[in-house]
Length: 465
Image (cartoon, rainbow, N blue to C red):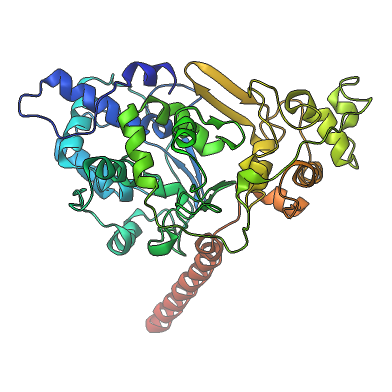
């Protein structure tokens, strides 16, 4: 969202409006809520940069879902929506024309938004956002996922449509943090595992970490090894606001988008409230982890006489070693000893959660897709060596070789990745069960329908005779 987010982000609390609140106050509050809810990230096509005009491609296990136009365009957007219809779209998951939204739009989390905040959001979108008369690309999933009415059953099972109510035994800061984390920022949509029907698991699984396409969203619980228990409040605040903490982590993928478009603009009181609530999430420990992800690694100088002498392409032979690939592609930024630059601009690979966690996916994804985030007007960029790279493309085998070298040299030596795993991550991650069985089920259904048609035709001809 960039500059538009910076202009819109105003330090306003997410409190109920006062009885004497002016229209300007209401719209300003709506702006802040739209940023906190990260609306522009999914409703802005990066190619056109038309904020809120839709067309952003969301790569789901069921296929590509394109976001809708949520500007007040009367022809292509929500310009004809009443406030009640707006609320139904945001909190209940169906549009004014009665068609159902897919939960790629996080309405199961937005269901908790209060009436007052829905009112402020509606005022902002209708009175302050400029209409964009563009029809975004339409979603066209394959059978059976193209049957939107099937969401009726899914919603009955998994949509708990109740606006947030404060927990009386907790103070105002904790309650605000819970509202922000659970509903406005919809953190569970990425950080909570999903069941066989792609709904969020509750109970002990809540915020315990989950796969999100090619990326792994880490454990947010208070566990000191698998979660955030070993992070200081200052660490957490810095990470949420900048996406970077020396000696711990750097935001990439969807988290980098959240920092760029939303989290960096939150009021300090809201950042503190989020941290207060996260501290109380019951700890969930991964039994395979005995050491915090950021505790792995020691710097080892692997500088060679060839580093920086020849173009990178000279070293990209199919059988290149991990050290050769590191020399050619990584060491000029991350330094020969892997410790990055002194100012932290190029991060250390040592004590880095990307290399020390319980999954190799984030390191592979960072190499494949790069890292992009913008904070306080300054961009952080790691080039992509995968499908979006113009020149420096690495093969699946080379990325597996490089990743395994990095794990052994600077991170968790127990981690490893195969060429086949890299291929899966490059293609968007493992296919969930529901998507695996859908195609055979659709084929079987088509065969059954065809047989019925043949039988009906035969029966009809027999009757004529």
